[in-house]
View 1 (cartoon, chains in turn yellow, cyan):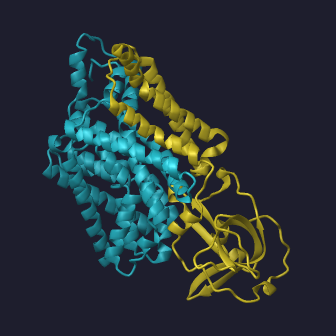
View 2 (tube, chains in turn blue, red):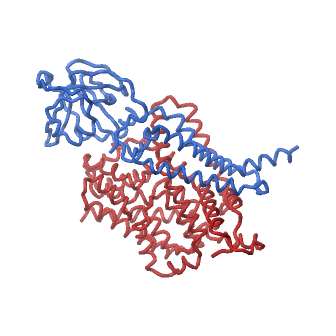
Length: 245
Length: 352
């Protein structure tokens, strides 16, 4: 009876590498399908994923083509543990795919660069009546080319971060900017000042329309938006949540 | 060229069961890995709705996804080296006891641009084929820094500040040479490299398949090379996963502000940035963007450089991956030497 059980288990153990390659193959295909991978990786990295797909296919084919039931493999706990470790990222991938880095990661990664400024009273009165295109620009544009937008009306989308103590008349609007993958994502933020108290919670997605201001505080350029309108918006799909260098 | 070859299925399944140098240590290792799986699954089951778990999961998966293609590629290169390049050829190119091989090893990344995840399986196979220990270590440390892709990404991150690119490349090269030299002086190949890497497995194969008289065809060799690669990936891949998980945990729990806090004490700042490089496990082609983000927090230039020079040489996932190539004592020496060399180089840069 024991022998009867032992042989299929040993064969299954011998098949484990192929099983792992196939699971990963499926994971990479799933990520490439519809550009899902951009929820975690820089879009320009698609050739890498294709490469991984091809290599995993080759690994699976080489293994399966040479596999024989005569292969003598003992039922070995080590092989099962290796397989479990290699499957773990796939299990995590399917668990967290719908989520994205949020206020918690922002607080952890944010390096205070002096972007926050004190609220100027009656700032909204200074908003010039320029034509408003309605197209949102990105935080990356505002932070990389602030001079271009200085004094302009802008519309911008991002997530809310309220530090402690909570200030109802200002918050940080942030997005993560990815160079290669979410592990290296950098938080880009801008201070949003409002005339009325707002109570959007951390992680809420909002669209802010208002005047972009570039000021110098202690010889450091500090940018902010004097908000005219703040609207809640649904969270974009996972693959649209990050900005990319 | 080796004439008698073991069937690929046996090679791959043989790799499934590569033993440890010491059976007791192997059991402890397996137990630790089992605990890792249980903890990771436990976090998933009990904390899956927490924001911190989402950060952990996203960072973990993204590190693995970014590194895995490189690792697969590195495994393939390793398999090709194993099957297509004979020991004699390697010894002719990189003979033992020739000091200049260290300089070649440290700079080979210029022609063979790979990141640190791809390099470990390649080095494993190179050592197996008889590449001198010091040259292999110089390649292991220098390869992921001294290469055109890393130079380009550093230039982009620092808005074409070529001085930092040049400093990173030169210091990376010099430190790789020094550590290669040092390791070669202190350790013999047998003392540094794990037995299953050191012993020429093909010689064992030849004995076990002595009745295979004919030379394998190119196609058979190609299949064998891929099988070796598949075996290497199955064997080493887990260390990438464990390292990525620990890095993700640290990224989730330790605020970066902590590392920017010591800006007024450069020596401490260098040290903190080095610890961060080890903990974050970033790819050498992306780490410059993170280093550059510390400029605005007035983190010293030398500390940013320390982050970019140490990270590709030594991080958690690499230390774990080294376990499949080197013995514990050699890994400890490599870790201490590399850390010390980078630290004192950066203190010198700071003083200069």
